[in-house]
Image 1 (cartoon, rainbow, N blue to C red):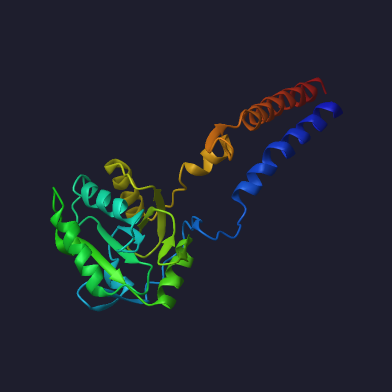
Image 2: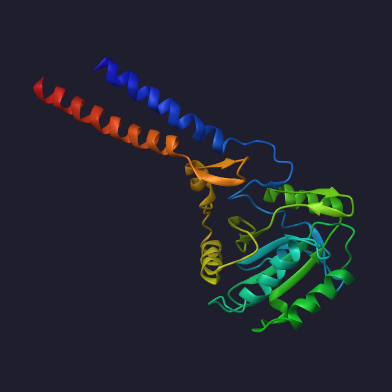
Length: 256
């Protein structure tokens, strides 16, 4: 019996230590640290593409898809916003009534004029147009932007005249609560609809990436993710030993 307990404890330590380190809060220089349940600074003031100064609470008053980008980005932001301009017309919800979209430039050098130029371009390219009021393009000063991006767990850094950053959409509740992160530059309309419905209900949903990171490990040499067989087998062993130990304990109690 003692040997079984020792084995059980060993497997628990082996399996759960990686899990603990996986979810541990570490400083991220560039990337995204999911801040589910955190509230955006709704009283902070930003500037719209029309040059109007508004509080964030005036802009986010219904379930919102927030895109943190910079408008003159030569890389990631352009395909992200192009995809977004396509997919919003496919979401089975009414833009401007059931939900809205907000783009915020994290480059404090960008002006409302730049935001207006890109807003015009994206609206012109829409195959299924949404009301203009349903998508707001914002700019802001460096202090206000940093406050918001830090709360959202969105970390970026300048690289000469560009920025190194990740790509994501963040679903926000009408109260400013972060509900879900949708990563990448290609989006499924159903996924975005679900993210908006969860934001409306005030729910928070961790992305599947947290689970996938447990099952997969990154291979720097091959530059790809590989199935972490050892960790998965360890998890199965943990469950199996736990069940076996539980059965033995019950049998012992019955004999007594």
